[in-house]
Image (tube, rainbow, N blue to C red; front, side, top):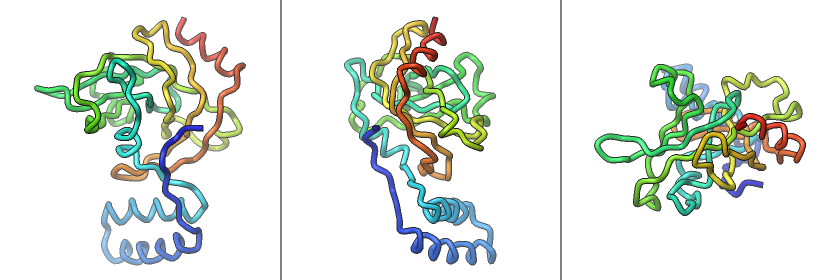
Length: 200
């Protein structure tokens, strides 16, 4: 499975902390308090949290400077990685609907992450297939509101050459850099073979 650090808390402690934050929110609405309350609520259910910026900062790079990790909206089929930012390339972009422009940012189809300290030079563009979410993980979740994070075994230099990877996480955005891990799975050879048709 994917090697990223996640946060946990005993359920009882998470619920106790959640009550404190809910009382504070009741007195005065605060976006950061609300994000913490959502995070605590998820940990109270036994779910883990992930700091996305930290995960990418620790991700190894391939020979072309691309992280061996990607994120995309869960209902998309392929993601394009690129360096973005003006005047210098200061961010990594994961765009699961390239060519559609910034108007889709509200749908969170593109995520920009600051270059970690390990990325000293501009990285090449790359393509990867977004792992399919099996019914056992999808359950009652609406995929257009969720994201998939996965290790990229090898970025493709062209869209048509992308191959399916194995070990994804299903994530929901909480706030700041925090995401809740709703599920994890390993793609079967059958699922990977079906996904391969996306890049042909």
